[in-house]
Length: 529
Image 1 (cartoon, rainbow, N blue to C red):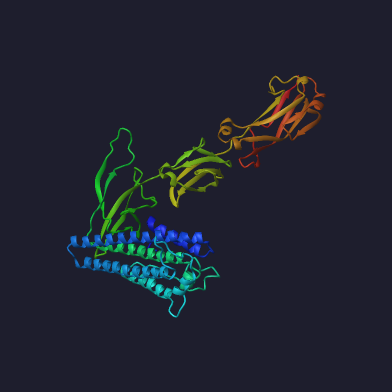
Image 2: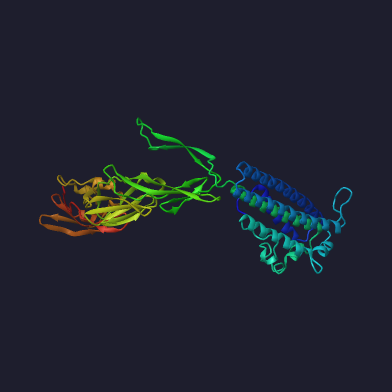
């Protein structure tokens, strides 16, 4: 059809066409065929309403031309509209004559005006398909000839309506139908009531196309006059964000546009979308040279061109000034002042000024990084004394943050017996020392900041029972944190001592990888009494 913005009436016509085409492809009963009488009646009513509307459109064009002083360009448009209205009437009259012939050869109407034989196919075929000059061929020439005329007269490209099967999307892929010409695919094996409905459908499409053509011509009348008929109140605030206690300042004015013209608008030479006379300016602000207040002054070129169908055009140009505020990077982390070497320092990096358009990427110097599941989450693993993190969003660099890096604090070793720390000064009673355990305790602040990296375990240590300068029995080498000393303590006497040496401590990092760790204290001496 003429376009995608169809009226409810036009949509109904299209739906009826689909129903009609589908039913014609079926072997339907007489009761169903009688429904075509209703479809035909509805289509005829639609055609009559469309003609009435188009006559009103023509009258409106004639009135507007007269009120504008009968200018030559407007008069030419009016005459073209009058010619279209006349031509449409002639074509519809000829199509109505075809319908009356169909009614006549199938028995006419009864005294109540009802059709005598709604199911007759043979007489329809004899009239429209058979013979040396089938009337359906003349009908095709009439319909498509009108469509070609209307396309040329209006400047709108209308598709042909009377189609052979191969050109009709309904039948093009149907092997049983796609070789048929217009008369066969439209009227072969077609009962009388369906044939009437089919012709009425063509009439409805013709009127629909005429509506589109006259509507376009109506906009061409007086197009050279720029009439501002769409008035809007506009408010331009100095800032949409105002702090409590501060003044709100804005300029209020009227913006007017014309529904008779469709302007083209550009930003920096590139076309932008125009909706209801308003240009939609949208772009991603890029960084610039920021001043001491964090603002970068920028401009873009705005162009509005109003081309008048009556001839001539006007272009309005303005340089629009705006400011780009330097986005503030907010980092949420307990260890934001310094990161720990080789550890998974989790950061939440936000840039509130970017709102929902914030989609960050990170470039890290002095370490590795891993993006988190949520927007702005990043884990940094430093491998140098300083880390630089550059934040970008949408391909635009936002800024760089630098962090000092400090080493992982050494854990402290503690030895326990009976669940309590051993007393290295006063010693332990021999009878109480039957088992012993050892733990590597992380520095308190480090454990609070990075609990996933503060997991230590003593994996190799020795316990020796000593008497004077000599060992008693064989030393115990332990791989676990808890050790049973019963066998060794049976040899112990008051005055002896237990000597403990820590040989290996492992730290589990945030990736559950084990690595060696230095410790604050490796040796313990526990007097026995």
